[in-house]
Image (cartoon, rainbow, N blue to C red; front, side, top):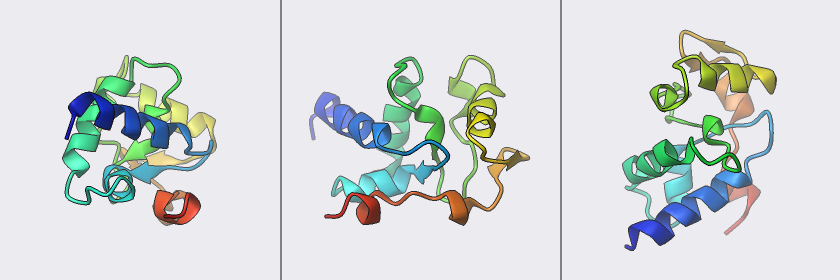
Length: 110
């Protein structure tokens, strides 16, 4: 797996997540055909924070915890961006995560 092209693929999927929705590292990995590579998707998203066209704040862990928050300008920035899109966060976890979850396998079809 070429890391640079994989990261680009991750970013392209992340760009498709609609405002007010979130997905998980594992869901992106599964969509890209590498189901056990959620951690690598996480590494890609850590680098995406600096890219203004990739909504890195919309990618969280499998239960809706803001595990990537420390890679933003401040630890609260990820939550602020999500709340600006109407997603409630409490104790670093998305409230009603299942209602906001965007599954690329379903939404983009494979």
